[in-house]
Image 1: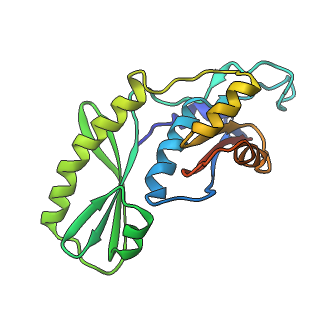
Image 2: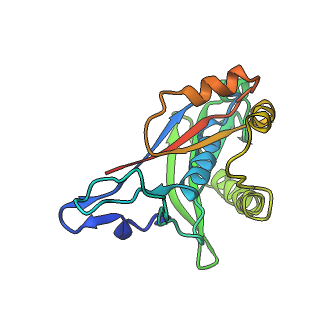
Amino acid sequence: SEMIDLSKLVVEEGEKVWTVFVDIYPINDDGNLIDASAIAALAALRKTMIPELDKSGKVDYSKELKTPLPVSKDITPISFSFYKLGDSLILDPTREEEEACDARITFGISMWNKQYMCNSCQKIGETIITQEEIDKMMDVIQKKFDEVTNKMYQGQAQFLGWISDSVLNQYYKDCDILVAPSLSESFGLIFVEGMSWGGSLSLPVMFAELKK
């Protein structure tokens, strides 16, 4: 989708570049883990900052992070997974529905120049998916893409910054997903903290990690 401008990750041409890793650590799920993970990754990447370097080219952790990851504001790749059960197509299935299905096909969709773009497609399962079924999926995808992006960018996603432990405790209890952009591996302590404070965390927890 070219969501990330790779040319801006160059530190020293021909020598050094930044590499972006997205690590996914599901605690548990009730279906449609792929699509939930993709949305969480997108949210994490949009808040990821590139570390500052010193004169020798090494990361200077004492400097304030000022440079955001070069992510396009106009490209939002969203994952949509359809499951086939007999003659039925299911979008956003539960775990039980997934296990009963015969095949899955996942599309990576974005919009560029006011046109819907298919950036990726992956199918699993031997069951045939017909052209008519693909056409039905495309009709649904256009509506769902607009619905998801509107929820993400029209005031329904808020970035609160630092909050107190008491407020954080309540957020852990109420949350459906935990997104954690990180400059270094945290060994899963955030997961343990969230669960110990009563969070259900039924959706994946996401880390966006930068390495040089």
